[in-house]
Image (cartoon, rainbow, N blue to C red):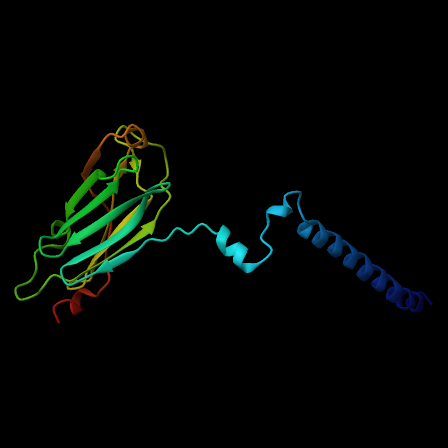
Length: 197
């Protein structure tokens, strides 16, 4: 008798539980998608959405003997990285937003990290930038830039990442700054046994 009562009352119990669960899920979804008080500022068409998107894109280009790319230094400030294949010099210039010209110049020679070219080989480099959110505060010389420039030597497969120190205080005052690009990462993208082949 008890078994029959449990069987006959479990169906209404299951239906009641499912109904309650559906109601709870409905309330939760309603609370998540409820328009906020500033819904008037939300885009109503894809074209309006596209206009509201702030594009932050780095760019890069290269030729037979020169490569260049851009990368964020600090907030809306961008650096131009230029690599001369012939000399191995890698520059980063930062534009002076107040009066034109360059406010900062940083430099290093990538051959110091890649080593000399093998006899009969031409320099062959690739270069891109990547975003990084530097941890910690600023030191006396500034804080690390918000991008790292990665340079790859296609002859050896070696890859090196460089950064720089940037002072917001000096930039706000319009003072020049610069120095050396700092090696922050290094790797090998090719098996060492394949490099000389």
